[in-house]
Length: 83
Image 1 (cartoon, rainbow, N blue to C red):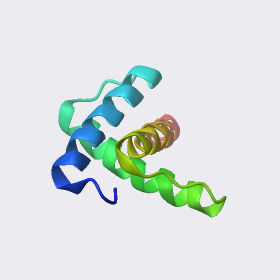
Image 2: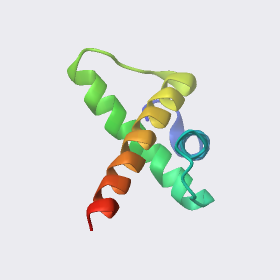
Image 3: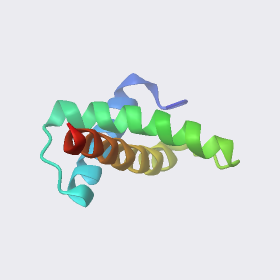
């Protein structure tokens, strides 16, 4: 999350994780929402940069965080379902 600082990354991560939780129906707490949102933004930005799409600023990172967090939740559910 470039250009938003640590506090901004935590706020955006929490919001992105919370939105992803609402979309997927996951049952996660605040700390996991923050982690999912931050890691989700990193994952989504990496994946989308491959196709030439990049997000910047607060809103862009929020969108990337939601997309990435949804992807991460789906991966965890797929792994848990098989285990």
